[in-house]
Structures are given as structure tokens and as C-alpha cells.
Image 1 (tube, rainbow, N blue to C red):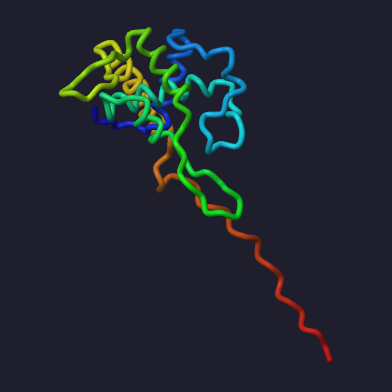
Image 2 (cartoon, rainbow, N blue to C red; image 1 turned 90 degrees about the horizontal axis):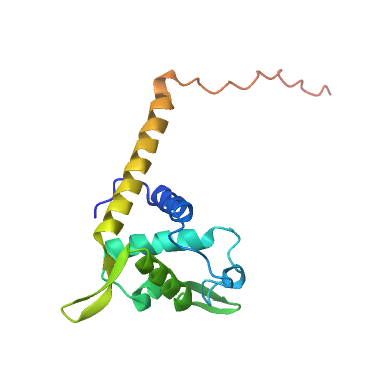
Length: 171
């Protein structure tokens, strides 16, 4: 699906909708889990589970059918190994698998087998859910664009106050 909205805004809108409709719920261990071995700490946001589920839903739409192994590569990152060179590490698959299972339970994604390629793909309900979130994001962008002033009408930055000429030291 072609996106005409900012992906960060779309992810934020999807996460908000997933939380409001209670389509996904973080497990009891979520506040204590890192998202991969390349991370040093647990996520700071209280809503990180919803944002990860939204990102997984979007990845299933863009790259689907897709499984946990490819999602782990997509969400992986650079591992800081001290004085040794950094290396790539995949994300933890348990978080991704649980997100996919919850999205499947809420009927937004389904398991498919396309020419021997197994994975999860978007359902019609999932496509409608994404399309609604995209339309809300695009209308929010239009509202923000209406309230901004064009460049010509914006006030010019205030000029710096004139300084008094330096007095030269007398010899």
C-alpha cells in the first residue's frame, strides 16, 4: 500500500487506536523486557508495546507475507561491544511473535502460504484499519497546514540591537 503520510505520525495514530480499541494488550512481563540483545535498557515509554504492535502491523502490510525472522532483522540494530567493533544483532523474536499473535487474534492479520512462502499478511479488516488511520493522519496534516502562515507573512527575525562603537585605548 502506498503511504502519503508521515510514517511516524501513522505509527502514533495506529498505536493510539490499538490501545483505545484494546486490540492488543501488553503481557505482564512487558515492563521488564528489552526489545533485543542490542539494547542496553528496557523501553522508557509506558506505551511501547502498542507502538511496536503498530510498527509490526505496518511492516506486515508493506513486506507481507512476513514472519518473525524477517521482522527480527527489520527491528534489529547495532550492538555496542565496547572497544570491539559494533555488530548487528536481531531483535528479540518473542515480542514480535506475541504482537503478531495478538494482531491475528484481533483479525487484523492472518497466516498465509503463498507459493511456499509462509508468513502473516493483512486481512481486509486490517487494511481498513490502516486506511482509516492514514486518512485521520492526512486530515490532521491538512489542519496543521491551514493554520501555518505562509513564509511571506511570517515576521522577520528581530534584528540585533546596534552596538556602540568601541572606544580605542588612549596611549
